[in-house]
Length: 153
Image (tube, rainbow, N blue to C red; front, side):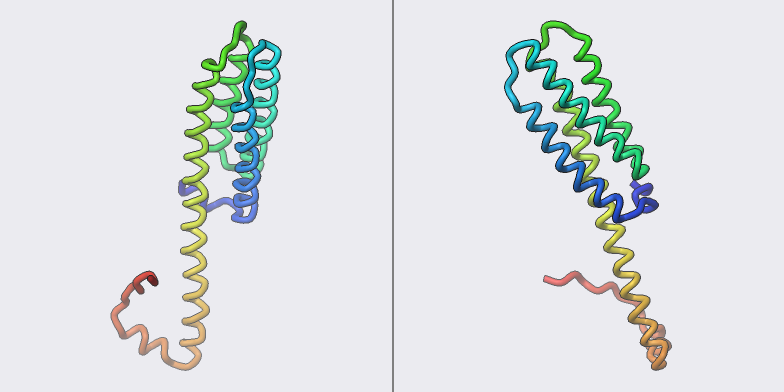
């Protein structure tokens, strides 16, 4: 997760937002009932297209952990394309991997939010202490023991 710190925050958040939309579409494809072989093939094609787009976006923002997970999903879809006589049960492993991907992306978002919170606090702290330094109160503040502020109610 430390790699998240080195990613452009605007690009990362844009990727996460568009990926959320893409994964909603993947879920919709998976929920869409299919009975015939042609319907299952259509489902596989839609899944592959959407997953491929997500993988490309993950690679573009250099989030390789997500790109690798999506690639594994693409491989699963490709394997299903080779099979004959598909059923809905054949898609269950994809659902499990998709759940893992979504959990990973949630943790990336949480890590990014935490990094943003820390950098936001440090920027506020620098601005606050820059003013304190100008009026001489920084020396007085430095002489006091440091205490973390408790979070608000």
